[in-house]
Amino acid sequence: MPVKTFGSAVYGVEAQTITIEVNISGGKAAYLIVGLPDNAVRESLLRIESALTNSGFRMPRQKIVVNMAPADIRKEGSAYDLTIATGILAASGQIDEEDLGNYLIMGELSLDGQVKPIKGALPIAINAQKENIKGFILPSQNAREAAIVSKLEVYGVSHLSEIVDFFKNSKKPPLTVVDTRDEFFKAINNYDADFADVRGQENIKRSLEIAAAGGHNAILIGPPGAGKTMLAKRLPTILPPLNLYEALETTKIHSVAGKLSASDALITTRPFRSPHHTVSDVALVGGGSNPQPGEISLAHNGVLFLDELPEFKRTVLEVMRQPLEERRVTVARARMSVDYPSSFMLIAAMNPCPCGYYNHPEKECVCGPGVVQKYLSKVSGPLLDRIDLHVEVTPVNFDELASERKSEPSELIRERVIKARLMQTERFKEHQGINANAEMSPQMVRAICVVSDAGQQLLKTAMEKLGLSARAYDRILKVARTIADLAGSDEIGIEHLAEAIHFRSLDRENWAG
Image 1 (tube, rainbow, N blue to C red):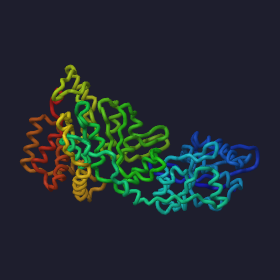
Image 2 (tube, helix red, strand yellow):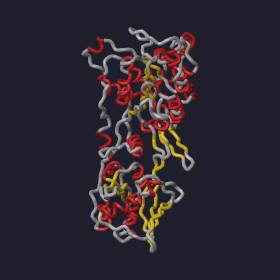
Image 3 (cartoon, rainbow, N blue to C red):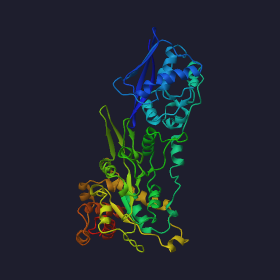
Image 4 (spheres, rainbow, N blue to C red):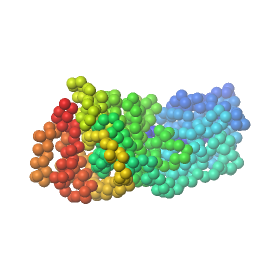
């Protein structure tokens, strides 16, 4: 009679329970796995045979058929080793099968019986809790990650022999317990960097405060060494802290990607991802033959920083356009389609020209005629259309660098950002999926960002005198609304519009000569 054990498959950031049926029958020794396994799963019986033998247990020399149900879903990876091995031990009478149905078992086996970590332990644990499974047995390196799920017994094991002790001798390893709320609140604002470290650049700090308050994408344009990267790395420190739901959602993505260490149970600070400009489009948005989340999903609920933006391949930048709008990326394959969340703030940095010194107050640009425009044109208009703030960064002078005056810390800036976000939460409470000013549709902009006649005249003058493009109009209104929120104003004033117009550098005609 077949013995059933239970594992799980991860698709996107969700999991589905997989039933592993093991049947041992008489006849010539043969090992068969059915149910759409990939090569890693097919090879598992060779690993299991060595692990059982080297751990002092017996591999039956009979016909063994392993069925993985549902049979029409592809099974991938080596995480089913421990599940199948447990089924074989039970089917061959080496452990009791009575209690197997109460536990979900996952883990990769080495040839000596050691249990190796898996990917996606958190979504698997969440699914197990939903299906009222009593407990989850998994590698000890993943135990804390799974234990943040309440009402689920989590046992971490490091060797195959512990499974035998568990089901045969009732000798269970210590239960892994994590206080989710304590884990969340104790490290919610633990950042290594702080805006207090930055000397000068008050106007750039102001622009990043506006970006954080409204969830706006921004691009920093300036010469080498002006502090673009240093400022961008400190942006997460002024964003509102993650709430528990966002922390769980972010942790699920990093769990699926295998980015959590054994000591991590929950990601409590906003992610900051900074891929190199040689990154491929698949690595950025996700995918591959076995789909995995990309950098934009790993930056979910945080910041994606693209340094040296024009150096990225154009195809790489263009694939970001849809995720920036939808805040979700869909990876479609012939057999399946998976969704990964990708709600992130895009912060880009670039030099104004190849030599880096166009518009520099002291150094002369050595680029030839037309070179600056050609360099800037590497970044397409549709991508720039999704960036609200264009910020010119100028070098810091010696007096500011040597000044003993303390800069404003991130904590104080974050307090202002949180107040502005609370105003937006109240404003958009009836609009599902809209959480910040940057996410407003054109229809919402017309209804919410109402300006006075004087404000309309200022916008008209700016459009005509500065040669601003039509796409700048909505962006200016969104940013002005955020600036008004930071000021605690219900109405958009002239001063708010004037500051917002200042942040449209790349829309000005002849900006690059």
